[in-house]
Image (tube, rainbow, N blue to C red):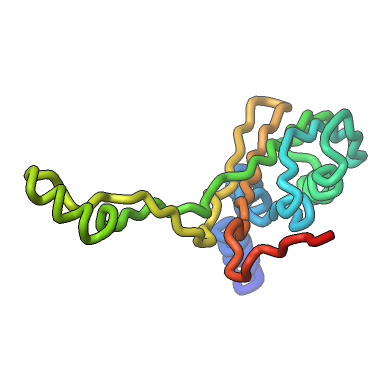
Length: 174
C-alpha cells in the first residue's frame, strides 16, 4: 500500500517536472513553423488572419501561398489557455540575408593616368563596393499573446539571384 502510494507520488512529480507551460508549448510550436518554399521563392509575404473556434480554423484573409501553412500550424495549436475562441495572425516576412557588403581596392585608370595622378599628388587607387551574394539564416520565429489574440511572426529569407552572366551576351541578327 505504501509502495503504491509512493509510486503514484513519484509519477506525479515526474509528470510535473516534464510538463510544459502554455508559453513554452506555444514557443516550441511556433519555432517549428517554416516559411513555405514556393512562397519564399516567389517572394510572397503578408499577414494571414485566422480564427480558431472549438478546433475549427476559419481563414479571414491572407495570401493563398501562405494560408495552407498558417492553417496547418493553427490546427496544431488547438485550444490554448482554455480559450474557446482565438484570433491568430501569422505575419510572414522575408528578411534580406543575401548580400554581404565587401570593399576592394582597385587602381584608377591606366598606367599613364596613374602617372599623371602621381605628379599632382593624387591617389592612384580607389575603394569599390562589391556586394557578395551569400545565403544567410533568417531570424528565429517569434510570437506575442494578448488574451485570446495571438500574433506569430514567421521569417523567411531572400535567395541570391545571379544578375551577372559569365557567358557573352547573345546578339540577334537579321
